[in-house]
Length: 121
Image (cartoon, rainbow, N blue to C red; front, side, top):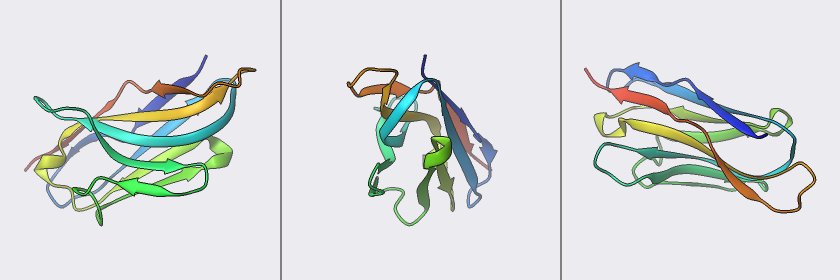
C-alpha cells in the first residue's frame, strides 16, 4: 500500500512563509515525479509545482519567484517552500506522486489527502 502524507499547512499572514512536506511510504520501487496541486473554493484544481526524476521543475506562473519545490530522493519526500504568501494562495494543497510500487512495472498516480493553507490578516 502506497501512502502520501502532507504536513506543514496552517494559517499565516500575508507576506509570511510556510513549508509543506509530503512523505511517501509503502513498497515504492521508484518515483518518476512528485508535485503539488491546489484547489480553492469554486476553482479547478491546478498544478502549483512539479519535480521530475531528472531534477527538472516547473511552476505555475502565479507562484514563480515565490515558491520552491525540492526533494529528498533517499527519503522519497518532496517539499514546497512558500514565501511571500498572498491571500489568493489560500487553498487545499495536495501532494501527487507518479511512481512504481511493489513488483509492477506500471507507473501510477497517488494523491495525499490534502493540507489547508490559509493566508489572511
